[in-house]
Amino acid sequence: MGSSVLKDRIDEIDEQIVKLFTERLSLSNEISKNGDSDAPVIEQKHEKEKLSSFMENAPGSVKEYLPMMYSLLTELDRTSRRRSLGNSNGLAERITAAINETPSIFPSSARVACQGIEGANSHFACDKLFRNANIMFFSTFDAVFTAIEKGICRYGVIPVENSTAGSVNKVYDLMMGHNFSIVKSIRLKIDHNLLALPGSRIEDIKEIYSHEQAISQCSEYLGSLKGVKIIPCENTAVAAKLVAESKRNDMAALASRPCIDYYGLECLSASVQNSDNNYTRFICISNRLEIYPGADRTSIMFILPHSFGSLYRFISKLYTLGINLNKVESRPLPGREFEFMFYFDLDIPVYSPQLLQLAEELPYICESYQYLGSYSEVI
Image (cartoon, rainbow, N blue to C red; front, side, top):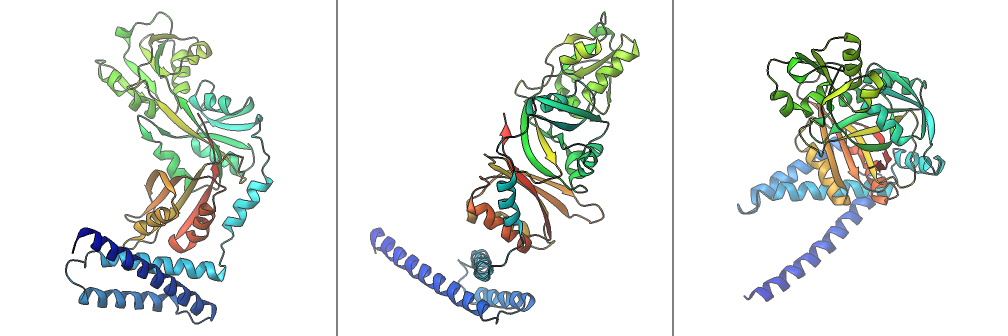
């Protein structure tokens, strides 16, 4: 047969598949409405038996494709039945309520928690988000999360990833132990400079202090220095203050240019980061779910069942709904061997019906989950 005849035959088969699939969903939904659906354990056993039978009788050339096809078919079947019964976990309603209750304009002033001291990059990210922020500085990221949970501050600004050094793992680990919502994010260009007391010389520097992320972002420059000890500390601005208070001319800090004026230092080498395209992304968190107009990114954190194909099921759900996955992060779960918490950033407008559909599916895909919020990013 010619290729055109074969293509016509494929089109006919596709039409039959659609008709049969439609009929299958209709029958399955009818069973659910009649209250005759099998218990989940019995249903899964039946699906495994059917797949095993298909595999035994299928030609060898298609056996590798059958598990994927049948898994997708049964997953869509379950989704259709849940929707026909109107099952809801309430998350879609929470999202809709937050959209309606959140003011139309992001506040220009608020009490905001930041890690570090004046001159820290969190400080500058906060100033870019809020015109008149009342900033409270805390020594640790954990303290920032706690200040939000306890209502000491309305918002907190925390770094989550850098374009050069990658994710701030400590922050993702802390996310598992705190309740919060993301209401905004911001990308801030980061410029690291070698700062020291006036009169200091590069050839005299024996110790350089900075945050571990800044050290990683400046690894090429630091590698070019000989006989210098690199010492991590909790913040770039803390490093600058430490140098200022030391009264030593053999110490330096990797910090931002504003720290020159804040702490009376001078710049020995400017812009020493590995890349000029060096950005850090910060999230603005709250203890309330606030969804401001224009929210086009959603973050979720979840734990999947420790079983074969669970991550595939989640990602295939995103594909089916046409949701783009922007970021994936995984962190080990304390006390559970080789099991992980997953963090996904999704590119999808909060007003999209596909997002609400995903929200209703989360309890059936995940062992546990936390909707972290929908928001827009300031660039």
